[in-house]
Image 1: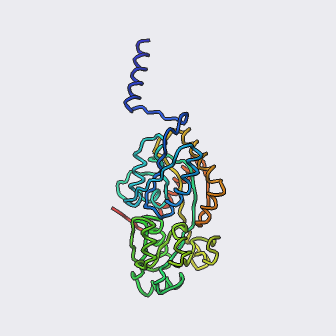
Image 2: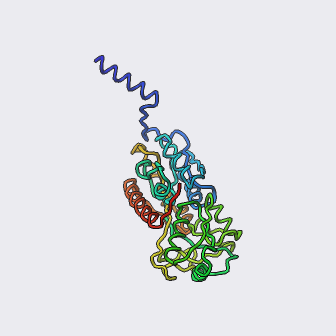
Length: 325
């Protein structure tokens, strides 16, 4: 009896000290939830996060605050969430270009996407859009490849950071078309697109959401969509499979993660909430208008998908011999 009382008292003391902090969905959420975006405003990740924030807040009964934490090619935002308390109040709006590639690119980066995070909900995916500056001396993909072959290294391409989908996508294009271009990395998709519109870089490969405004305004020229199919939002832009690059299958995807060891009941509640919001007409139209497709997965499905993508991108990066310190 005395030992039992001692153990109970000890466990209570540990819980009060924060060593044992069980968190369940029984009385969650009690406060606003921070949704961390590891890039500046203006890119696809930021667009999707803000599209979902208000309806998700209504679904959960608490405000969702989108917090941009750019830096380190997404490592700042990813690391912030990985090291946050597993209480459901700090979530990551994950982008595959940072999440599954960075651990292969940076030495001693302890951000394994499966071990350091809890998979919660898939959001959307999209092919990539190849856009060029209006100042470029070529008007289509064939012209770009011809010019790059004749002028090795003269074509500058932007990216939203080392190892991002735009970076890896451009490397894949170089390999498949046997050309050489010069990489100009930026802090985020918004900065890269501004540089393209200004003509300070020549080429940018990005999610349609990050380029649609400038495309519709005529500030940049879209020349190809990665993969086999054209975009409904840009029916006149050919797919790379039509243009002699049938194996150029490149896409970006976005999903929600929390810190490791997030309570399963909170995970399930969040998964249900996100899936309900993604199934609304307003959100679907918002996603589709940006050239992306809504997708849903269970937490277990997302965990398996994250692991498979982690391995796939690792193989691509190794083959391209992309290394960062």
